[in-house]
Image (cartoon, rainbow, N blue to C red; front, side, top):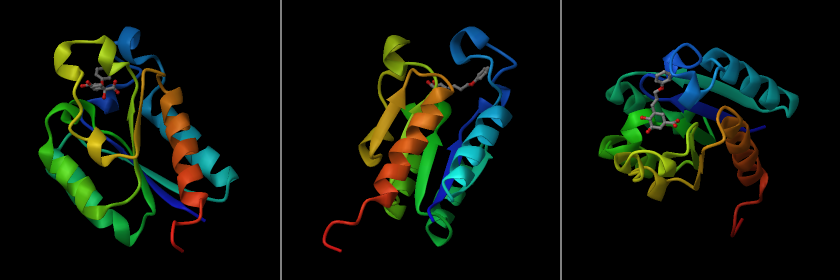
Length: 150
Ligand code: CA2
């Protein structure tokens, strides 16, 4: 049984209610519910959490190894500049998948760079809410593979 923490960064609580042309019509509640169902069907545990506050996200990442085996994170705008989030993810060393609803490389230049990507296993960008399902499948695969050297 794997335990997965899903973290959503700032403004993602507005999903489905504003800017549907960029971020789609699916609400964060719907994304979290679908992920929880997917994980439960596989016999895994999954908990989702959103915050608009950088320090709260850092706290959740720091606490994660006590309770979780891996992280799925959409850091929102923090993606592009939060060295605090990057350092926290690097420190805990849990397998992490970075998700973006939009294709950040097809948008403004300032969104083309992720400071989180180098400490993530990989990044999924541009598939809307389905990106979270893809991230879950990727993390499930990694967590079910035998550890090298074990
Ligand atoms: O595409 C993504 O998932 C982003 O992480 C979303 C962030 C943005 O700053 C990143 O560059 C890419 C913004 C999240 C804001 O979410 C909203 C949702 C609905 C209405 C307004 C904002």
